[in-house]
Image (cartoon, rainbow, N blue to C red; front, top):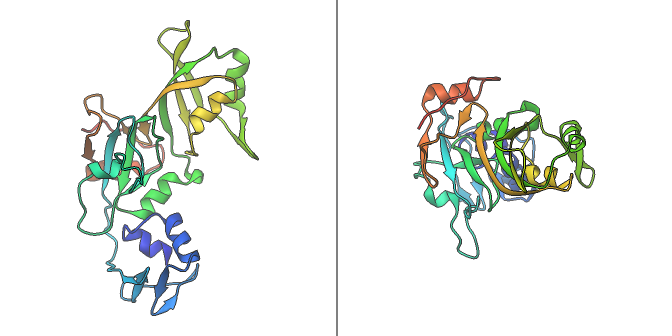
Length: 246
């Protein structure tokens, strides 16, 4: 059930699983349960509203967006602040699903797709899709701190994380220093929390690559471009070459 609805672009698989558990989804007139099976021909409703399903396209759509600081990665904000979804092109069916998030004060590359299955694949930790960030850090990273960040440090209750790579960028002296850091997972505020674990603070954070897709240097904040079919296929392949579209 959740795979079918995700493939139709109605949400990510994890999001839809929550809807099913909350009793919001019905199939053939009965409340759906996790593990239920359905086809596009079945009568399915979400919150009592019928949904129209079709066989998933063989080629999902993906757009790359340059998120500026100050925008929220949410569909609606009670305070009326600007959200990333207000900038995206409309879809005839389904909706855009964000592949992970960036917090309010972070900027850079965000991917969106009309396929919940693809979003789930790109976000799931078992696939280890690389994320590359530029971070301006306040505080000195000693050799011991660097070693800890690469080996793994606690970042919450029963939670730990680590960087795959850390590379200094530019000057190595002064109060603020830039680093290029790589992760293979996307937990909430993980880059900031990792640096905070070694008594450093991230002043600015920008994501410049997700998987095979780089943030083009000439793509202004608040603008987007759609990946070509070959680039979408490259994004779904392990260790795919990076693309510089835009």
